[in-house]
Length: 117
Image (tube, rainbow, N blue to C red):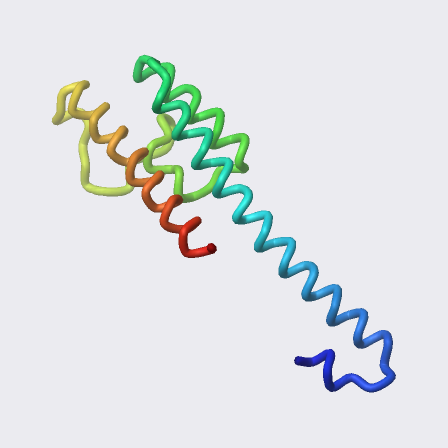
């Protein structure tokens, strides 16, 4: 819209085009990142990994994607931010809780991707 109103000011037009390209690049980068996170984590869940192996690989993915805040809930070394106390539960209950958080993450990412279509 802004470009349509610019008459002969080439510098202003170039600045506006650069802003549009930056915005578009950031949007595409975000969508690409979401797709990769989703696919990598989904494929890990399809492998026959022990909980420890899965957890270790999730920690690496967390670092590879530059520590996204929405992954913190299932990263082994991150502090728990809700009222859950793992010492009051069995190992199996704790593992199920973490796995649920991973699956919830995948559902959110899938929904984000669908909204972008």
